[in-house]
Length: 384
Length: 85
Image 1 (cartoon, rainbow over the protein chains, first blue to last red):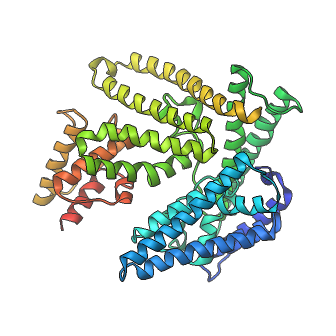
Image 2 (tube, rainbow over the protein chains, first blue to last red):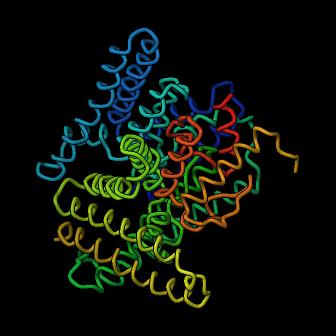
Image 3 (cartoon, each protein chain N blue to C red):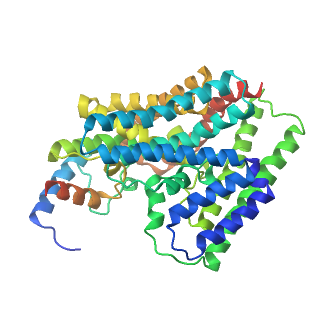
């Protein structure tokens, strides 16, 4: 995330804002794709840019082929779909295995990481799902690169929505107004403040120059706050940059420490990941299972889908048993909360304002405790 | 607000029955502008159950993005009307 503290990045970003906001005949999505390749090439490594272009082209070719053969041959379509889906999945698994067990350095690792970096992988899955359903058009190759590798959302998200990215081309060109520019700059400055002053300043104040260590509950609570300011600050910067560029960039955090349940926490913390899971995993899985088994099994199916999806979120973070257990635990907790909420809402006394307020306060404390404990469980290993 | 046509009225009445059944509330009231925020317990978990019940009731099928992209009850009503032709 330190790239956002690099002056070269900001000079390039400013040039991109000017280029994106100038009246030009190129579609906005294509323009953004080209600019993303240039920024990555100049600020990071030109080989990464080339690889991004190659990946974008490969995904585009696969999906284009599906579109062409779709009507003529369902067998060919399925084969293309499987190839486009399993090639990135296979490389993603390899990347995660190397990251966890192997030598996570050097050029091969860098190339592997670019190809299968977690957020890029999730975007590939989304574009495959949406386009193969044949209802949404496939972007042109360079434009698709811009969706898969948006330079301001590349390092740590947020995860942009494919359908929203497409809409950039439908909107009529309008110049950046002073008010819009001021709002965007304000967001970027706020993000920098969160990242530099609150996250890094706080970290130096608490841990000095030593590495962060999670050895006690207090440590875990402080690391939880540190990650919020660090990741949240980065996300606010990306959000502000997105507004300046005119590129749809979702909000990623909304006061997560005020969440009254684990379910609500995931609607406030890393929001774009939660939305991605809902769009691409939870809803499709739950819908198919409920249709197949019948709505009388909806609760069982819902619980199963939640556990499976959060187990996936766990191993998406890192391939190890701790993250898997963490994901299953979060999914199971959320399922328990849903059942408790369903019982609670059926009681007439649950409508008393004072009781609702008390439950809210207890809920906020419970959520912070449970989530801190969960993060402590997975961070303990990574900080050792 | 414009008066509802017979078909719209039939759809709405059936929808109301489904909503009351799913949310276990016989007194539940909805209208075109009702959203998930207005009904306690209407979250992504229950949403799928609701939509599958709607599919079963009307004999239609929604795709994933239609299920996930609805803004309010009015939009659901229009979607059903469109599928019923």
